[in-house]
Image (cartoon, rainbow over all chains, first blue to last red; front, side, top):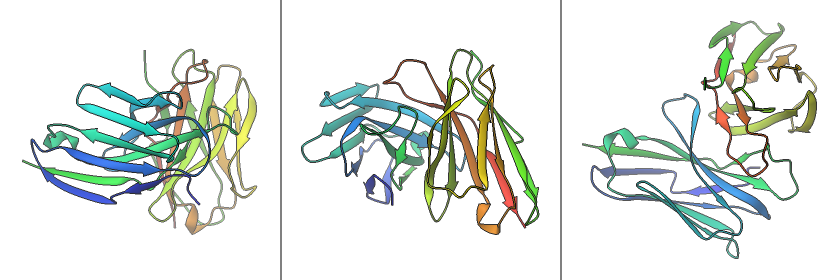
Length: 113
Length: 113
């Protein structure tokens, strides 16, 4: 079973709108990361948030982490057609090596012009 | 710096054959991880290598094996291929420091017929 569960599974929005997706996980983590994947290609790292951080920003991205609820959210502001992709959260557990990521099922985002 | 490279990009094999996939990490990255992505199971961790040693292994049968060379390049091998091994195989490398993101290659698309 996967460590992370993502919600929603799919999201369809128009350019300029914000997109929010959520990720929940089950056990203690060292960090949580968000990745983007375009059409079955390699994953692109978006942002990493450490377990002692609550919020992080990178450009149009905002990530929050609530370790008491074991959940994270990714907000993409002012979305563009180029943001159309699948988004995955991934965790590094405290019981695992740093190179082992456990992925959620992903959120498929479609941004229409 | 050049990114993570994977060869070959596409591969078609027959059931029962074996296959070897190659991954060259970013220069200076000593940790290499492998993942399998399928529509049904999503992204699953296969193994992680660091300084030629397997540091972690996912829940895959013994037909899946890997190794890492002294220049940090890594290979994974799948013997006695099954139809269910058809997948996108992704390799990722990360910097030596612990709490950092992974950089993914474009993947090898394996089709087993």
